[in-house]
Image 1 (cartoon, rainbow, N blue to C red):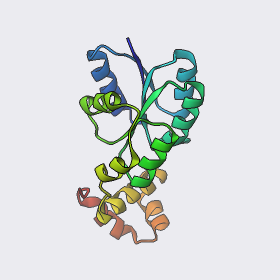
Image 2: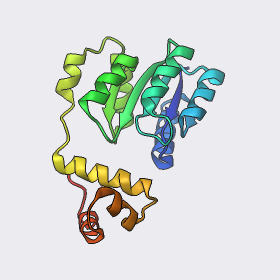
Image 3: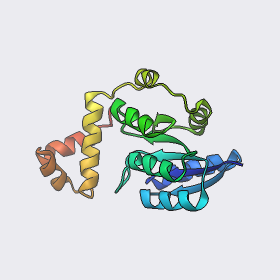
Length: 176
């Protein structure tokens, strides 16, 4: 049976994926950050990995690069909520076999593993549509807000906008 490593800093998403893979008969290991994932890769020698791109500390791209040094046969799928063509291309160049946007379900991930290694960068750029300007702004605001521990005043100052303007933007739903 294949062993799969699930790396994501969002506990809920990681555990949901974990349960789904277990139901499908996979042996799983989970990690919430780069350091945990590298320790598990050394100890458990998984054959597949699902790696989140944005994590606190070291990024998923660095994890892809370093994990493949330890386990060159490891097949890695990168997941992200902040997709871009540049990061997708970089992930593939570093050795990931696929790049999926969150929220990806178990079937999409397994399909990415089954399509395996000969992924061409040309087809990759066609599959990923760049996010709208409103979406990019929303994601940037969310990252700055998270960096400020959800302090509206601190985030507004870092963004260079008035606190009330930020509150109005946050009151709206996230754009698609």
